[in-house]
Image (cartoon, rainbow, N blue to C red; front, top):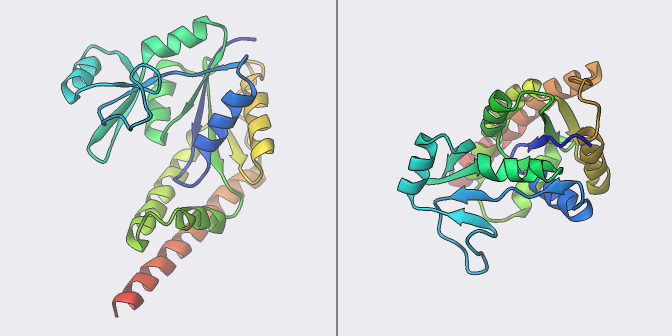
Length: 224
């Protein structure tokens, strides 16, 4: 097995983190865990060097300046990043590095570990309404916040054509097996997307726009 970086990206509610966790748990002999760095404070059950490397903002920025990060992003005024040293540690152990990151992070990985050293996978449930239901089921966000996430999902869909593979996440076990299969494919396989999948992605964007519009109307009806 040739160890490589396997990148999972998806809009919020797409299920990339759940899939990544299941892959690591079910195939610990094939996939390793790269400990990320963050500027946010640790939660009560989290430990430095185990869950994250907890850093000050200055430490994080110094690391960026020194080129220590493979990719990074900022969310809610906090910074998160994948350390090159952690990635290399896993690769040298002979295991794949599995990263669940946003589309911008996936772009940064491709620039430094071009295929076949990396393979990128874009994940979506088949039906856009499922994406919306998952966001609503969290019950932690307002209609306006969900609508913004749907707007963001439209942008991410436009970036999906840059990914090597697309997975329909309708069944966890099936999606997990697809990730494992893709990771083990021959290095010269290249991108594989079927015509019907391009049609699916195109229609997905249209349906997401309809859902975002419906939420917008719902918000204004509630105000009215």
